[in-house]
Length: 490
Image (cartoon, rainbow, N blue to C red; front, side, top):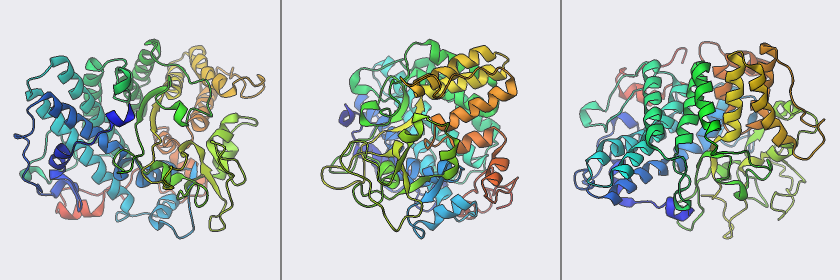
């Protein structure tokens, strides 16, 4: 099933790379002689074009090193990890000492805009193909969902960004930043368009593609980011009331191969380890156990503060963190001490078994982007803000009940408080421990308006009016001749 879904179609990849970026996305000239007019002729081309957009989700520039740095490591949930001198650019992210030449913002900027380019090509050209109309609408809807996702991360990281909804031509390579309100409006429109045409489920061979639930769930997240809790409630409840999803019964196994594409999966990135390295991702490798037995890199180390945030006895702590001396989740070995790593521990949610060939790169572990537990917690937060605390408690306690499992009710007990301010804090805390090290914490802190206070309490040199956003990559500013402006105080 995975292998069928992740096939790489070289002809379209070469086409879509025509406007890709090695120096800067928006200024590059087309590279090859392959033209779109010679390509978009058949239903197969439409499928290949859409799959080429999905392919970006596994890329280093989109969901690996810099992505983890700019979501988890930058927050209070984790530290850089690895050895003291490894990847100094991530140490700058961890310490909030980065500037506009740090390679992390440049990496994601290039990767996400390349994904947007591929989506734009698919959205514009697939409608021209003579093919089954229902499939055509679905494929365009999938591409719109992915374009919205790429833009959603960009606008949360950088604020105003260039908004492109068509394939770029050379006369449009340099574009100014678009106000973030307009970017959000386009994100919402794309997700609404996607939800209108995407199916609730797929047959086994196509599981992992964007669904109606994924589009509505992402809309809930967008509206929550914007502080529109009425629409957050509406969209989250649409997903809940669809009856499509349920919580996976075993939290610890949720992040194993057994838990991939489970009843709780609303959207996740499918990865498959293969000899060519075309279907996998290094997302698992960079966070894996450094050295024997896992041959990972050891980045994204769970912080002391995250460990202390779990309630006594909460089994999610053990399911989230791997310690030295602990048996690996597959029972294959015990984690050995690596003297080069300080305060050694690892993100268990990103752990996958080492491949049979002894390598750990291009791993096969899926990347969870949107889980049903997240939908329930978004509903709980919105309902509480909308003056419906009892309804909020229903969804909050569903998450806590699953976490508790068959343990006594004194472990992760049900929450009963109905005061809005107190319940808000409980829901925020639940998001932290339930979604720990799944790349949500930084975005949550920023939208909650407490990133400065939390970062300062964590000992980080957070500068208000600056660090809420990352800097626009300096090379993009320079190449544009100042058409692209820099964020404040960088």
